[in-house]
Length: 289
Image (cartoon, rainbow, N blue to C red; front, side, top):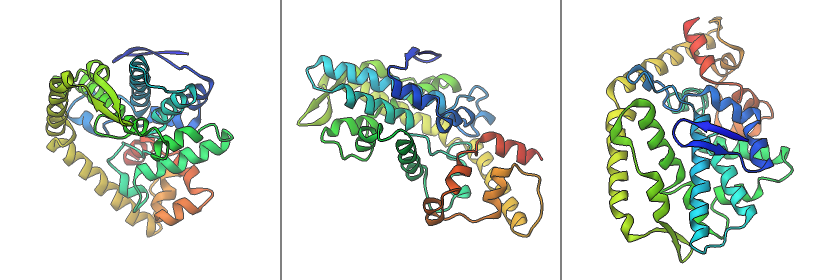
């Protein structure tokens, strides 16, 4: 399959495993979760989703693997497929509106732990086809540089979200030379390194990241909107626990009427399934109601 992406152009889904992930309901749910939460109150173009970001991160991972192979580093088909698979799945645990409500739906647990939990559930469905992806994600794979490409200072997650968030918000200071940075990547003693001639690209990347935090992620109006939303959900939970019917969607109603801790979430057979039905539309419709 080929998907036309506004940032990187045509992105190929290169294997049956990747196609099965993209069509899985847990991954399709990311189509209904905004990448930047409530940033659209300031930047109206910030309507892009975690689904788009995950595809972009997978594309950059494929470019990084292609580059490292061209420099003589051995990456097997299975390792490449695992790395691409985990880049698709790396954000699958996000709740509605991305980071905005992270501690208000399930207490004491962050989206990374939920991601790992859900990837394990999908792996059971897929009869172990995600074993390599999981070993890379948990940094248990012998080729450490693969994990660094998934989660590190120069991972393909950051390389995508800076480019993508800059593109959709129109904040040009965040636009980074991701293609050049990937071209400068290399492996030394099993670790991901950067060739010296890529130094200026990294300086620009770090500055772009800083400016995006100033201008977008920590914009005062975005923070104010998030505080208003979290206070609304807090109040809704108080009223729900008092037995009041607020006309919320069934999946949100469950989390308002029950205080779900980390232990309950990971030990129950049903809570995670209700969580995977939650997306931005539950919050928007319920607040409107």
